[in-house]
Image 1 (spheres, rainbow, N blue to C red):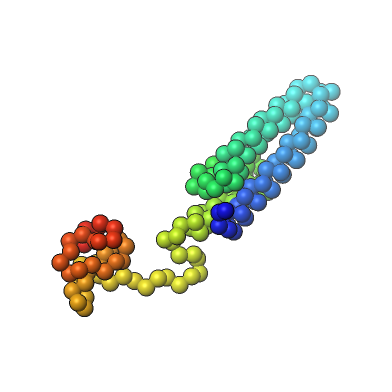
Image 2 (cartoon, rainbow, N blue to C red):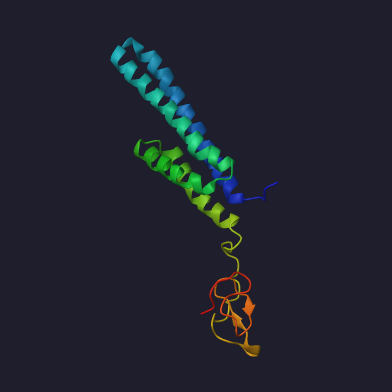
Length: 164
């Protein structure tokens, strides 16, 4: 079982709501297009736009929503940002804003998933001593992992990084 990542859950929910709003908008456009087939050119244009919109919804689902569901937050970030920008440009303002917030929450999800990075608002861990400076007892601390090493060591005994 994967750990709880609230930012990822929020991003997934925002992207899903944006998708639902896109589907509703495309369905309305489809119905209006069918109704306006009385004026063939206008109706055909509306139907064409609706069909392109449904392809758009499928792309958002595959490249953004599915990736978030599968835990690929890094892989979902760029497509989510692209979908947000394109939605805003095409005047789908609410889905665009939701995708944009989802993009930000995916960045938060990546920070939450990384064990090395402290969460926002949490106190920073204490700073490691200078890497090459021998301290009491001749110990040298690794700048990479913070492990204490004998004063004569040239490489860290924990991670193998040079102590120089």
